[in-house]
Image (tube, rainbow, N blue to C red; front, side):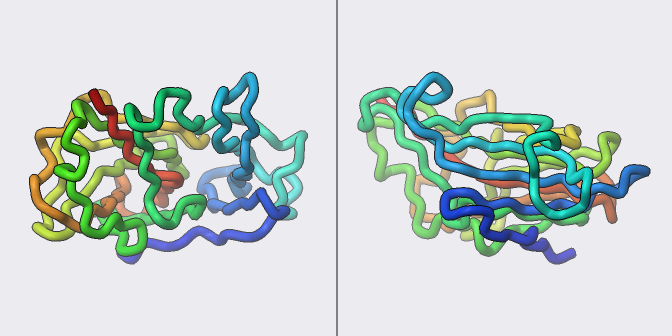
Length: 209
């Protein structure tokens, strides 16, 4: 089952949205707005504001009265050489699949990623925003070694939320990464064949001594 790029349109210069067709009785779309978040109370060093909700009037614009969730992806407030966030290249574009066997995304790829380039790294995490169109069906995402065609252990993220939910790995998978350059990709799968699941804004964070 081929992965689909969820439609991405300009909202204003710094804001974009993608619509995800939700299944069920409502027949409404779930929309997401992404915008830059200036340094302040929500993010000390700035970051990205992620706003989501249902398109009640079906105009493909997320209006204030349709907002259900607001989350922030904040830039690090630590010294830059102590924490490094690496975003995947199609940052800000949402992806979906309905495949239960899983699909390897060929766009969200870090080419020639080599953990040995970060010799003083002592831990690493993987994060992404996940969503499912059916709360009884899970959305599962993990990092994938496209060079050796194998998943990266301890990188699995899972959500059953029909609202966009930020998930982060809880296990340090530093030692699960090959000590050679690899194509580091993302695998996404639905908990039930035919049910659409989504992810957006995947990133890895490397923490250094």
